[in-house]
Amino acid sequence: MKMSLRILAFSRGKFSKKGMALPLSLIMLLVAGVLVGVSMYIVENLASVSRMKSTDELIANAAVAGIEEGKIWLAQSFAVSRSLPKRSGLSVSQSELSLSVVTPLLARRGMAEGIINGVLEGVPFQAVVYDIDDVDLSGLQYESNAPPVPKGPPGGYSYVTEGVITSSAAYGIYLIRSRASLDGIEKNVEQFVLLEF
Image (cartoon, rainbow, N blue to C red; front, side, top):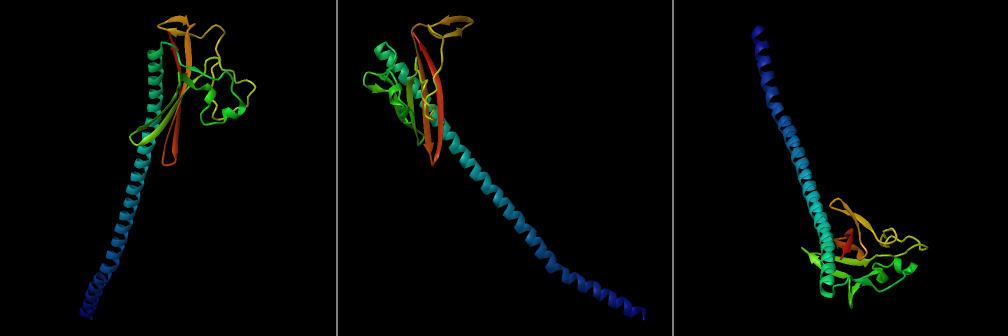
């Protein structure tokens, strides 16, 4: 009777090892498939985020390039005529503030307007140079496109140069606004420029 128990136990163990190979391999295959799926999802998201970030950086760089082109336009305008570019309009109406380019505030040199169009690495930009010296927008309602206007003391602005406070009687205050857009993404950059001569 003892012999038959051993044979029964031996065959029962052998039978259970054969039966576990298939479920174990299916479980391992399922785990491997989940790991591959998760890693593909992560790689795809990283590639998408990297592509969006590089596009965003490219658009921002094009907008900053527009600011630099506006500074170059101001410098060339002064070099050619030895005078600062000035706006043609003396007043601004409420309807003009809502336009994409506020025409009465545009800096002009002769017939040349301070609008610079360009392309940087396939991204188009437009820089607009506004002459905002002594502009009074009081009494007008705020429009999101209206250029900010600095308030200065009477008699000119004063600022610090190398630790010495100076004031300028001959100066020009400009706002350069640059817009760049690509694939429905738009970046706007603005910078004040104070020119003195």
